[in-house]
Length: 286
Image 1 (tube, rainbow, N blue to C red):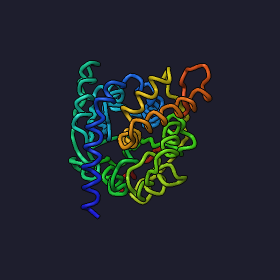
Image 2: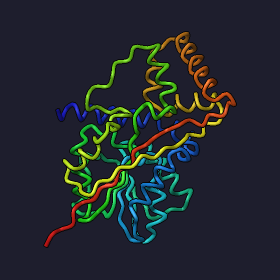
Image 3: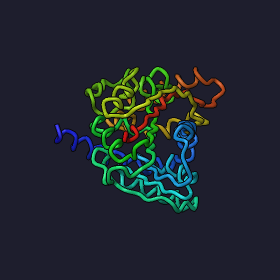
């Protein structure tokens, strides 16, 4: 099993390094899209000025950089499997003159930090891609101080996330894609009702709460939407890479038709839905 997890980790690292240029290019749009989820995570963490915070699967730096602006006497450690994503995060921190951050290329299933290091952990849209969800959750619990807090976001079901299924549904009609294997990374892996609560209880977390947060991606035009999704969503790019030019054009035409019917004014403001999860580490009992 460990060999399988290592393979998945390496595949994830390579994938996100490969797509880092797309995420850098579209950073303004994607961060605007994901900001409400990050803002809600920050709100429920209720951070103190001197907190030590770990932001896991930080990508280009959020919500870790926003958190760093709130814990000015504290510090935020940004972690990711992807070296290239963390480089973008460091560039974004420098642009915004945020000094109280560090970065660490590491695997969430083997965090390079001592027990009881952090007051809080944030992890926005990372859980779905972890090879071993229970080990990852236990590692988060381990590095939290007693009474420490976790806030995370995962995607809700596909029927509530038209922003990505608008394309994936058309691809699935035209290309026979194998379904993701059980317990392997996929966007909607953590969407099942009660799944995240059960996982975090098994890991040892307490006081777990889940809320649904709707949102919208402001992609402006269909052309921009199509281009962006091809450059930031690995399953879309991978599926189209295996199609010949004629099939790609057919898929593109059908996607455009779906979007024209949904947004006749041409303004792509596509629906999303996320689950925001809060959990705590138990206080020591004396």
